[in-house]
Amino acid sequence: MEIKKDSWLVIVNPHAGSKKCERDWPKIRKLLEDAEFEMHCVFSEYPYHAIQIAKERIEKEGYNKIIVVGGDGTLNEVVNGVFKQKRYKTTDVAVGMITVGTGNDWGRMYEMPESYKKQVKLLKKGHTFLQDVGEVKYRFSVEKEKRYFVNIAGMGYDALVTKKTNIKKQKGKGGALSYLISLVSGLFQYKNVYLNIEADGKNIFSGKVFTMSIGNCKYNGGGMMQLPDAIPDDGLFDVMVIRKTTKYRIVTNIKNLYDGSFVNMPEVEQYRGKKITIISRPANKLNLETDGESLGHSPLDFKIISKAVRLIVRKKFAGE
Image (tube, rainbow, N blue to C red; front, side, top):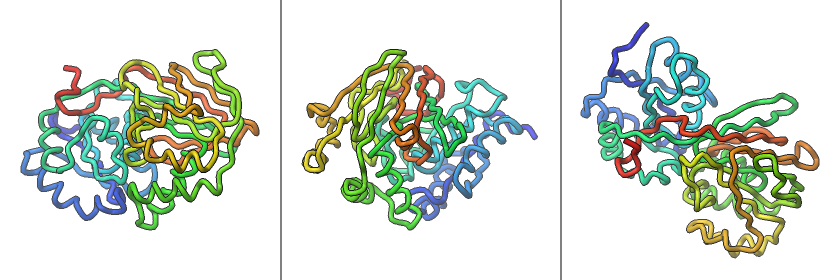
């Protein structure tokens, strides 16, 4: 079945924001209807369902305009669906977002308005920006897997905190405060990991690491500026490594995560590159999360795909 040219596919994650999305969806739907969006709405029902919805609806029905109603994880799934479909070039599918998640870090990067009414107005204007996309190959148990991401991939301590936070989300206890609590409590569980890191074929780091991030945008964890110098369309990953350090140093510098000034700590190293390879010792020791979704473990191979996804943003960020 072919859809009309101006039709939008709206993919709704009712579980986003500790089910805030489910509660707010009637209001959001009315705003979209009042703005005269011609749309077909589909609810994601389980993890990774939005990947399947996006892929199948694009291929079978020809949708090339999508609105994501949910959080960063839902956006991640839809972008993965765009990359898995074979009907269009990825840049021929426009993806917009109404942020109803617990972190909303991608929206923070582009200064997306908080009110649903203003977000719908922004979507109606349709200004777009071609953003870089990260690709990571990892292991899940013994199987090789691949995932795309638009914001940040976190490893080590960051991945542990994300996993703890996601467990809380499943119990209806999400949000930035939940992340902060997991950040502190995880200190007593985590052990530093020995890593060899290569960027574009050159070894840039060998040693014990507390945590690290690789990405295209600045924020994760509900407003923490983990990659303060990231540029989302420069064709390069920003890489941040915090070497082995003390619990006291971490706790006393948590506040500096929110303005990016933590990068001035002597334990912090920053790099850039198009391809990043990470090998841990033992080989499967380093865990991974992308855009707030817990995945698998090392060894890890990252590759940047330049200006590969078309995202609807505020006019000041648009590339047209």
